[in-house]
Image 1 (cartoon, helix red, strand yellow):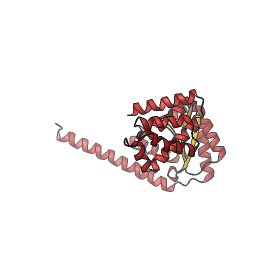
Image 2 (tube, each protein chain N blue to C red):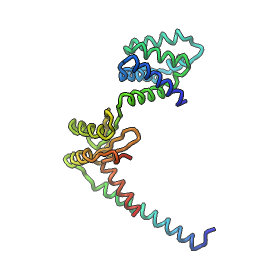
Image 3 (cartoon, helix red, strand yellow):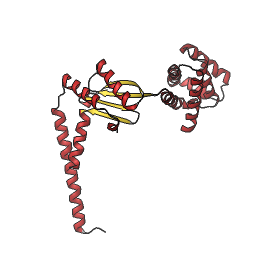
Image 4 (cartoon, one colour):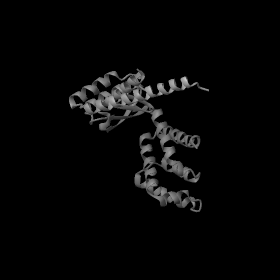
Length: 179
Length: 59
């Protein structure tokens, strides 16, 4: 299934970049449709039901696209997923599309966790350094968690940069065990 | 098949390892309770972390 959804995601990304659309806006549009689908069992049922004809399904889609100010390209992509009975996999397709967009634009998402809210200057310095190390533009999201005790933990993809007090204690524990 | 002596040695090694883990856990959890990072220290920690982030640090 992952290979199939990746194919749809790549094809959509190809069209978005070829048409020079705002890729981030396309991501937001697909997210909005994903949210509508998650919130409405009736919509899920209707779009996934072979007994409901495509023109009826597309009317609902057109109304949603109009409400969110979505592009024709996004509309056609979602219509394709509905037509091919792949709409159930929209979350997976959206995640892969986002990853594809990030890769093509050289963007990396960074999740930063710290014990307190970081100041703007700290955020700027952190993002600049992570950008330097990864060679990518960083799109950071911040969270606080008292459990880190102090310092910060930065997660970029599957790579973790741990500068937290909690991390130092964990490393100390390992050293004590292995001593 | 393990001899009795080997069994005793294996059990002793296992007990020593468990004791080490317990002691390390205890030491770290006690340290954790004692640690109180004030804002100035935390800012210094973040500054130092930022300065030290390097590609090789990721895991």
